[in-house]
Image 1 (cartoon, rainbow, N blue to C red):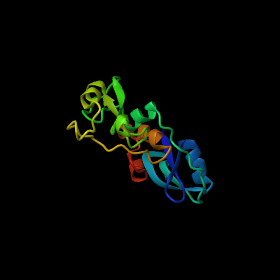
Image 2: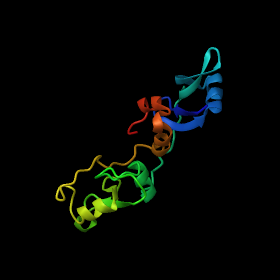
Image 3: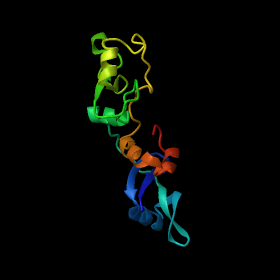
Length: 165
């Protein structure tokens, strides 16, 4: 029995909760079930996997910190130039700092040591290296948690409701 994606009344992801809390919200009429698993709690009550609150909840904006760990997490611990997966990753500035490149979500990517050295103090175009995916800031603070839960085809129905995973 798994985790349940909770959506606001506007269909934006709010959080991830356990199935028991989701069932309580459904029974109290505070939420509606949008997706379910093939497991039934009762003959007519399937285990929810996505629920939507009936009333809008205002949530304060929470900025996602720009850290090495979060860059690696966003890039799935994979070199964005050669697709190497492993522990020997570094952070690369797409536009080098010496050329005015900033420490931003849009300018930092995970790169293996080999690709980082090969690229050196050049842009990917000058080094004739292509980025597999253009770097961008994660859409919401739930991005990493949702990405973990949808890995290995678990909770694949969440992809309909979440941008960028």
